[in-house]
Length: 610
Image (tube, rainbow, N blue to C red; front, side, top):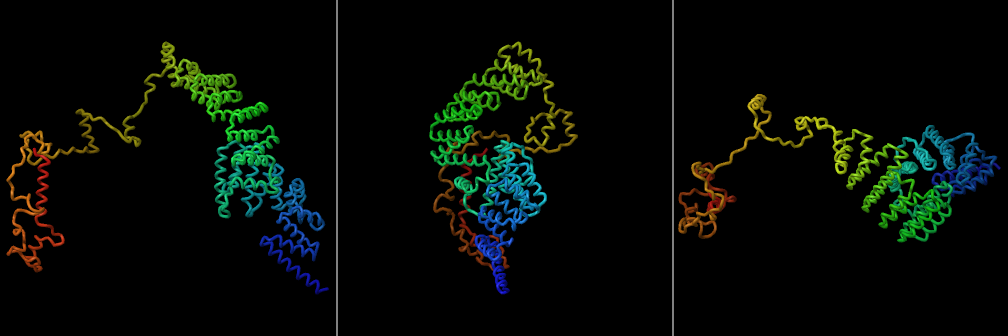
């Protein structure tokens, strides 16, 4: 008996070592086999049963794990296995049961608090969830703080999106793509779509940087993302509105990937589920437009607007956009003007006036201004929007030559602000064409020229650092001012102009030749060059040669010439080094002189003297 017990203990120790090793390696399937062998030795071993539950959870067998817990309730009490039981219930979408299990636990550990926050989030109890995560972040210090902050921002985003609660600033540094994404969701809930787009782009870039180290796949490929939403158990993690949004995205993806039949099928299914929702009919209309069936798309939208008057405004805006895309601007204006609740809005007025101006229908544009001004005159008189519309209407009429029609608007504006000189000037200009006497009367209200003159110190302005170029007129100084200037001393001396150089043979008594600027050959008194003179100069023979005997220039034929290599230190050496050029720098004897004479001749022929 003792030997058998010792053998069983040794086998159990070996099995526990195997469980530990497999657990560290993440091989929970193999660890589960070893745990089952341990339970065969000791079926009520609490640690072995707990390890079995963990292995089943890691392998995704939540129902089987919960069955083990419920089968061994005497051994696996709530204090021992509360977290594992609540987690299995949570993953099996038994959210209320998970909440009861957590609340019945005698000791609330950090991992139970984490699960409690997730359960509250699934139950859409966002206020309680926010308080739970705040308490957890405040009272815990471990490596999971970043994940908790991400969950906290997700709660705030959910409040903003689903409950339309103004999110509070949590002071979270958006250093991860999860935090940026949650912040974008919160902005979408507030309707700040442009800011949300920037956050999403930042989140996308951070996600690329984060995942590029682990995977080279394109995680933002739309088809792959849709496939992920089809995974088992995803429907239990998302709210109804999120699941509905995924179905909308599937329909849009089918449209953009040219799967027309699939797009129509999905959008029709969505419309049957939510008949009053806008997106299904908008997707159907977009698909028809891609198929060049614009008239059918407009008809579809019109039918929806007739059946659902509450959503008619948004549908009509889409119809107007389709008409503009087809080039039917006037019909688009008619559709927009049929939206009564938006007729007086500044954005609608601006759009209609711009479109009518494009069609050169000035009367209709003025009518739009008039209707909007009348609405504000009745419901919001003298409000900033009311006065702004009046001013824009007046400027528009003046721009298109309707000064007579602009008088009433200008008078209203001047009445509200009598000190507005610009409006008064516009009013006088308008009256000058209709009632000149009235214009004269109004002109008396203009400020005098003295009150309107600008008191500017010109000297200070010119000497300021902002003056980059100042041009002063030259003027003669009077006697007093000249003495004053001389007494103060000149701060900066003026540069004296240099006098032009005169030729050497200049005679002030002789009148300069009026043809001195012309070449010699073009002057009236030029008679040509006489032949026969200067025979000894260059003109014949090879280039560089002269008529003088070359023997006179040949130092080797001169008897009295010193040797080419005189002795160092002798008198001949001094004279030789002073007159003879070294061989490697020596040039032909006649060439320099000849070239110089030729240059002199060219100069004499090209430029005349005085």
